[in-house]
Image 1 (cartoon, rainbow, N blue to C red):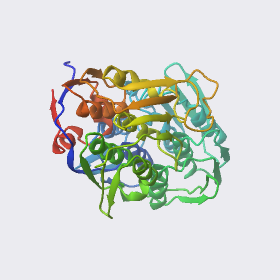
Image 2: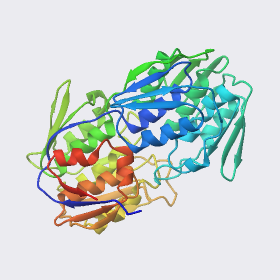
Image 3: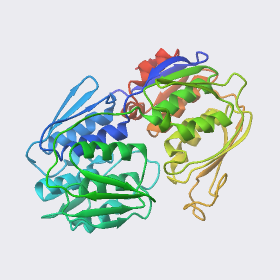
Length: 433
């Protein structure tokens, strides 16, 4: 099979309009939640990304039907024909671990293969496993995956060691039909978590949000099908706003509510970006250039870890020294060598810079970076290691001197809605082959 490549020729400032659809991380989790209904559920404004097809294949393998029409994804639950997610899905994404709870509710047993996802650091399944055991499930690890069994899941009290998005989703999906009440402490509160909880509530779940990262779920006997429309992807929206800024242009992003970008907008404004914001779109420009910043990633409502990859490229075009402190994933900066090969002046450190000491303090994790700008980047031959790093490579290629060849483009196509069309619409010379 021939490797897919993108050939990019810098073509000046990127300008124009982009409409973002729902997040890949939202649509796939909603598809898993739909397994729990006793009728069809439809998820609107779904992105056209590889993640949807991968998740659909997993659901179909265990007996669900999935229909796709335009921006709608409909999941039709059926009897579980096989409570084992096929080993062919090993390592493709992190969805299998989320299917354990729904499969236990429907079949009393489950097997899921080893999970995958972007290589951005340890994302152990321990939180998920311990949570399911707290509900009364018997869970065992095998060389090729995880096996679980339970006659009935029973509500429990769970305190997560870290406000993990995935673990919070696992608990929600198990708790909504468990017997009795479940209290989740130190839960994640990202917009995608709220969106999933609202969808489950439409299906008939009883979910309450309490202060101090607590979520309370009262289990119900059955859930019905429901309809929802996803809000726009905040990561994609931010990425395209930066695409305009980094090339000296301006991009108007439609479809993502302002409240999902509050921290991001202020961060860019501190760097010199000017914004126009309406109920329908957000536009950013930097007519007077960009100044450096010190930014620390964090769980919501902090600066999202997925925003830092495009921000790193923007730092190379800001006049001065910028600092990035990554506190969510210890290997998130693995993409930096690719940017360095294109001329970016970035140094990475294992110390906590630009913020208080984080959980990677006194470890060997290279999780802080100092970036010097303004730097003239040069075109290169770059392999994209993951979804978000892939987008940063496109941004670097767009502002570089000379052409670039990008490999591993399946990563960006797995997570961004029709990126080739979107970038071309903004004026980027991009040849896909």
